[in-house]
Image (cartoon, rainbow, N blue to C red; front, side):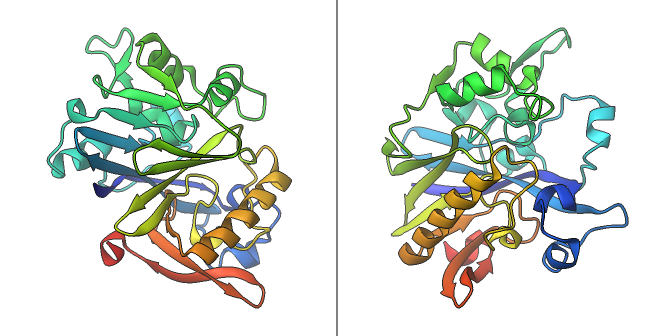
Length: 284
């Protein structure tokens, strides 16, 4: 197995929305905001090459939305999903599996593009099975008012219509061996049945954190996003995960931290805290 971090771009979100009830005087120490109170965030994916399987975990925001839509998120930087995939020596046709932690637009938008005539949509990864969970799929396709703006039908329905959608079977909150060397933790605080892959790699457990832990700045327990549908459940899920991650020395891959790709944790007087933050290549 070989794993490649893959940056699909950067965007900006309101700092208050990203840290919920935590005051700006506290969260801005780790995530400084601009004059509009916007903080910078990454949209990282992982590419896993294992035998004849090439799996992409999440795929960024894509490029098919309107200029008005993108203007709300201040996209910046030179990173692009397909460009960086090709830099690694792969093409979209090589991808066999697209694993979607959840279906918010910044995690799944890159899976679908306009067709050549711009009359409809088609899959970017034409040969890939796209993985979700049945509970989350139903949640996303019949969205609640709070999340409706994050679940865009043009990102979701073309996957089902392609016939290349499959569901990971949720058995409790943790399912082992969903794929070879990959277990999945299911969490419900941010959105229903978000999937957090645990990848056994080079003697370590590498965890793709998605929106359970967006950045190192979110490690303290009360630092929970305003976007989470069930913040108290997030705190419970995050607390249990952080204790396990610290005890078992997990390596956490941070999808949204604009500076740090991965981090490790330690137990401290005030609870679990950051141990080391570094780049993927420095660990692996």
